[in-house]
View 1 (tube, helix red, strand yellow):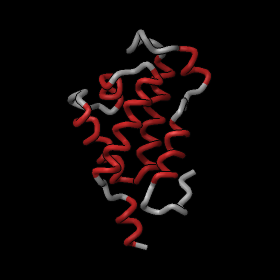
View 2 (tube, one colour):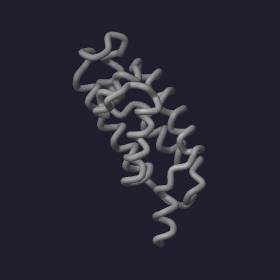
View 3 (cartoon, helix red, strand yellow):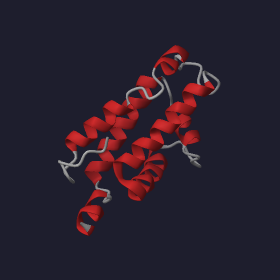
Length: 122
């Protein structure tokens, strides 16, 4: 069991690439920027390598469920703050579905995960 926990929380270059692509798609779909995400993560920089470094630490703390939960909380903060931080964001979109596509993102990651294909993160 200890081996599976270590494997679950290992960060690979493939995992980093998947998370980076998902984050970029998610930000685009929400009309948000890397700067918005950087603020949500309390990052010192809004550059993607800095954001990925923070997300990697989140992943190591609790795997993909922990990372997805953190991103859901950020998205929820965006929906409650309305358009204050980003004029291009659509206020009605975030109000009608506060978790947006993150549940779909988590499902996609579960499907592509090589770590433990039978594990259910829901």
